[in-house]
Image (cartoon, rainbow, N blue to C red):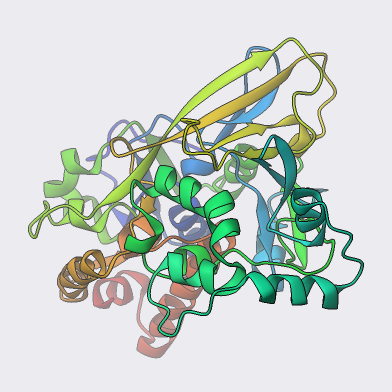
Length: 393
C-alpha cells in the first residue's frame, strides 16, 4: 500500500473513499481491481480495518482493539469474496451468561432451562411446552420488552434481558424498538452455538492481515490519520466521486441535530493464567455489574500461551459511534438526512454509520458488493470512460 505525500496532491483520483472499514475497503478493492480505478482511501484512525482491527499485544496475544468480532454468514458470495484475502480458522462461537451465580448458555436453550430451574427436560417438545407455560402473550408487540415477555415470560426477561439491555442501550427495553431483542433466538434443543450460520470461522491470521491483503493494489493509496472534515472542501478536487462510510449526520454538519448512538469503552487486560473463562464471551445481565461482558481472545485465535488477554466491555453514551439507537424518533431524524444524501450529487453513502443501521460484518460486505454491482451496471449502461461514468453516479 503506497501513500501520497498528502490527500490534496497533484494526482487526481477517480474515487475518494472515506473510512477504511469493511464498506470502504471492499469498495476500494472492487473499484481498483475490476474497473482499474484510482482510489484514495482515508481514515481518521491511525489504522485500517475499522472496528474489526486486531493486533498482537505485548504478550503476543492477538486481540480485538474494539471488542470481539466473530465472523459468520449464510452468504456464499460474501464468504467466497473474503476467502480471496484470508485463510480461515473454523470457529463456532459460544456465549455464556452469568445468571444466579451459574454460567448458562445464551441464547436460552434446553440446557439453560434445566440448569436454572432444576428441570429434566429431555425433548424439544418438552422445552417448548415449558416456555409456552411461562410466556405472557402480548397482543400488540411494539417494544423489545414485548418481544421477550411474549416469548418466554417476565422472569426470564428480567434474568437475561432487562438489565443487560438497560446497560447496553441506556434505556429500558420498553423504550426500544422490537428489533433489538427479536435478533436473539430462543431454542428448545441443546445447541449452544451463538450463531447457526452456514459459514462460521475467524480469519486465520486476523482481520488486519485480511484488510492489508485486500488493499494491496497499486491503484489504491491508503492514508490513515486523515480526518475527512479537514479536506472536505477539497474533496472534489482530489477525486471525481466520493464514497462516504462515516456518520451521515456529520457529513451534513449536523444540520438537523445529532443522530443518537451508543458507544463502548474497553478495558483490555493480560492475565497470568492460561484460560480465564470456558468460552470466548461471558455476558453479565445483572444491572449491579457495570460491564456487559468479558471476552477472551485465545478462544477465537487458538493461540497457545501461558498468559491470556481479556476485555471488559462498558457501554457508554460518549465516544465513537457504535450502535444506532433503534427508536422511532431517531429513524425519523435519519430519514431527513437520507433525503439530503439522496439529493447530493457525486457522493455515495454506504455502511453502518452512513445508513444509520446496525449491520453484522457480512451484511456490510454484502452491501458494499451490491453497491459495486450497481456502479458496474451504470458504467456498462453508459458505455463511457470511467471518469465520465463516475461523474454521473
